[in-house]
Amino acid sequence: MNTIGNVMLFLIFVLAITGCVAQSPTQRDNAELRRTIYDAVPDDWRIAADSADEISPLAVSPDLRQFILSTVRRPADDREKMLTLTEAILDSDGIGLVYDADATHTASEAFQSGLANCMGFSNLLVASVRELGLKAHFELVLQSPRWDFIHGVLVETLHVRVVGLVSGRRMVFDFYPLPIKSGYSTRPLTDIDALAHHLNNLAVRYMQQGNSARAYALLHKAIETSPSIAFVWSNLGVLLSRHQGE
Image 1 (cartoon, one colour):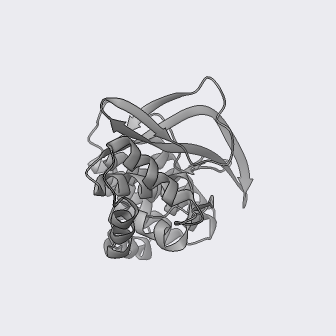
Image 2 (cartoon, rainbow, N blue to C red):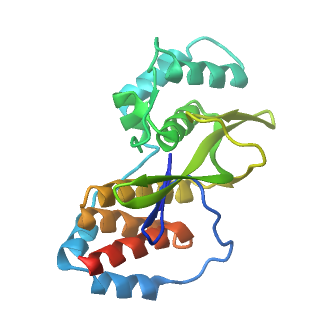
């Protein structure tokens, strides 16, 4: 399985959590397949999918907005604003954000809890930087896979980070407890795909907890959001296979 801070699911079973997996550039209409799967799953899975709340990883709560504006009060150039904001997120005098591999949080959740994995940190920083009218986007880091065996599932952890753009120059912000191996490559991740990664991560955690209905609801939404991310389909396949084996 894949997830970010992310992980991926494979059959033995392998789970992928959002981190980073390459996607096909060709968008295909798989609506019929999605509908077929939806019609075949248990009733409580469909109910969970139909009643699921919208998740907005980049939404800024009033408290977070106040923190952002109070952090960057004095006149400064865009580079200094971005650095000041990042320092406030990480420094103990500010949020003092702490890494937690399970904390796939929205921007506001990361601010409130002080915990985040690389996905949660990226949501928080991208949302905060944009709140100041500056430019930032998600970036997928493609490196050698790192595997863990969790609750009978082989999990591949992937990685996402933030790129700020100031006067045409890149500023890279990374939140990860392990060094990134040399030889990696990167590619930009759209907000839509980042949302699908976020939903996938949450789904993997629910799968590990045995909440199949909630896991399906999140994977269903992730696939609706960005239908061509291969590892989300793989994770859905693992969920369905595990259900058949119960």
